[in-house]
Image (tube, rainbow, N blue to C red; front, top):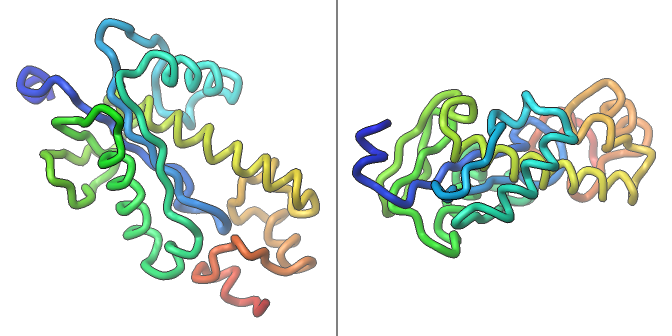
Length: 194
């Protein structure tokens, strides 16, 4: 990793949130941090409290050299599958960075097809600051989408389970049926006809 850092100056980290839920977008973020404005406390977003994530989200937005949040919709997930949709959303985030990267670290074991060099790092959100930052942007963004959905459809309990297949969520789908933005290709939803 240090060899890469000595060779490239605009290194982006990329992560996703939302592969497992039954509803909504898969959200990705790409972040290039500013070495002159270090951000303390970056780590895997899942290991942070919601309050801390929100604080770090704002710090990243304010201090990163470049960032982009991108999506693949539930419809795209249904059409091309969750893995391909995730890679597509990652590609969108990287390609739409306002200041482009010259190297990309991707969380996980697979890189999207990019025109610039990249490396996949398993558990990268705990190991690479840029990926941690991307993880936080993606997580906060998707959680906010779920809170908005909860305001519109409070009977589904999205603020509690964030769209994951919890007993509460499955019970709500059984009672009220799936919503338009539920992922029809995911088996709990595929069992219901609209």
